[in-house]
Image 1 (cartoon, rainbow, N blue to C red):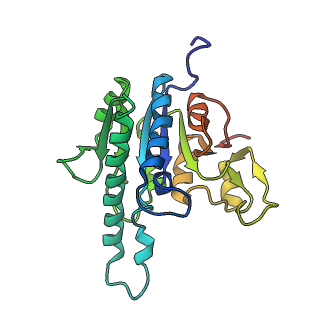
Image 2: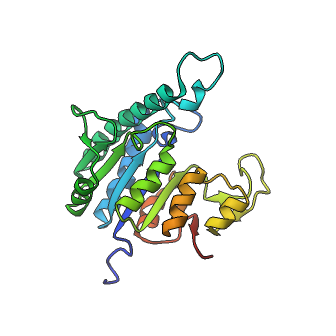
Image 3: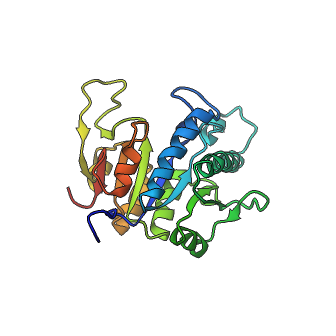
Length: 244
């Protein structure tokens, strides 16, 4: 590998619904989507294969229907959330292609008129051809978070790292927006995340990554250039791995 080539060959990016709107807002705001699309396009142009696993919390959160007075079953709410990720995927697909980069939207929930079914070998082939793969629909099953779906796809697609995009600079000992004395961690092990009960990703996602040695990098995607730096191999934010 020459010095001009990226250190990483393939990454999976988990982007939550907050990437589709300004802080403390809901829905889809195209200024936010376009900013995200520009960063993703830069990663592709840098020679890194990238797949993006979509969240849908900006549109709907299944947990909102857990209240005892809700007539919607929890499993139904989870399926509704999966459909929300497809809506976000469609918005991101057009925004990325407006940057002149080819994409494929794939989903574990059947939606043949707007997306391809998620098939691991097909997704891998798209990545090898330089296409950006946008993955929606979670795993296609209820009671599984999109964090766990991202860990699953990172392992299936043999990614070099799972990138977790957040609104803060990485992992802290407490919420830095509420506690100014919260300690920032540059490096963590999977065991430390579990022992300290740090809210990085859900426990199943952490367990999958720990079992198979998939590193996780948690970073602030709102900082210009952070996504590209993380994708090509720079240490941005917090790196979670099997050794400190």
